[in-house]
Length: 216
Length: 164
Image 1 (tube, rainbow over the protein chains, first blue to last red):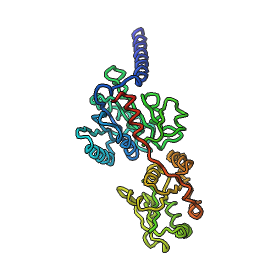
Image 2 (image 1 turned 90 degrees about the vertical axis):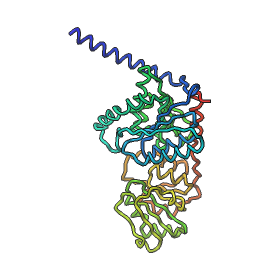
Image 3 (image 1 turned 180 degrees about the vertical axis):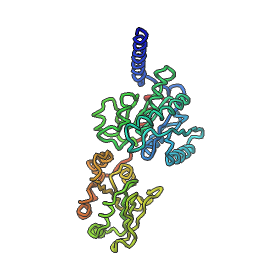
């Protein structure tokens, strides 16, 4: 009995420590300036279709200080790979020393998938995301809404919680979202370091968000 | 040749294809000087043939890798409310009439079309008001849609992360 109580108490303590640590990691975001020293390793979550188009618009203006760039796409997505390669090769003509990779993980949620099976496939995606993020150790995860972002950001946060590396989470809500956040947006709003929205009505509803007008 | 390009994106929207090819709608288009009607019908069950409308030249297809060329050639774009289609048409600088599929409820994609309508970047109607809209619409009230500024995002991030 005493053993059981001890086990429960220690599990609770670990959970508490984890939450405090998570809180600290999220809070320190604005003070963390990885750009002052070395180039910034970026993990770009490209998702699919419209999300890819939007995120490549954002990447257009990032300087070569954001190198290397690792793009993550859902394994069922062929269009995105083509778009990314076209984008990177047009970029390559500008600065000679660019590097990028494309990584694939299972999709965490197909459109119209039921919520219960979403949980299972998200866990599956997490199983692929953790090794990927732990291997690449990005300074920054840039994402804009496909479900695939969540497991990747969770993996990034875990690096911070474990004290291995602070990973900045930068979220840009899609321009399609005028009045309400997407599901991914609502999940990542409290967890992200920089949360961008593109319409004033969302800025008013979400005080932590950053509004710079339309940016894609 | 003044061209209207109708696009339903990756979905299907038979009601729109059916309504835009009715005699009434085509007459309204003719009255405005449009002579060619290009239809991208997606997964819909209707695929009108070239001779389906005697008054106007009709071309129809389901999907293409890129509809950029069709957008470029168009003098008017009629689109479903999908965000991708709306942004592509406005990005190409074309007058845009969005036809809302009122059979799709709570479609979050409507948010963007509604806001862009509020800001006078596009016109807005349903299938039942399409012909009336084609007769009475005034394209001159539309405001140009300026592209977003990813540079502002990059500058913000540079400052926040201490990039010099």
